[in-house]
Length: 124
Image (cartoon, rainbow, N blue to C red):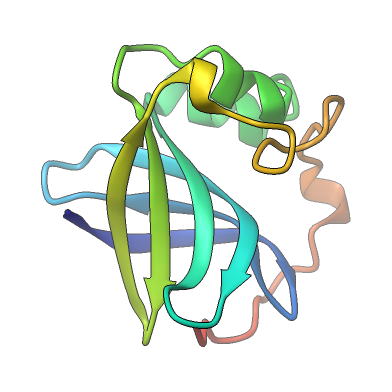
């Protein structure tokens, strides 16, 4: 298990939907909510992502689904849990393990103009 620190919440609807976190070495993780589990907390699909690729996503040039289906390096996909304000990268996934119920829909490009500015406090 790898502890993560929340860097930014990109999309928020009742709870963070898309967020950016980092581990102790400064590696970025792009995380998308896929499930709320009563015991485990909020479950996110997380991918390790380089700064240039993260900026491409934030700039609306990278499809969110492509970030997960085509990670930059091997062993870059994780289940990230958020419970009691603690983010943790847990299980390592392989691209072939990804199912439709976990993956975001194709065609989602982040749009900073549609972002609402301030984000409510994060409560998991």
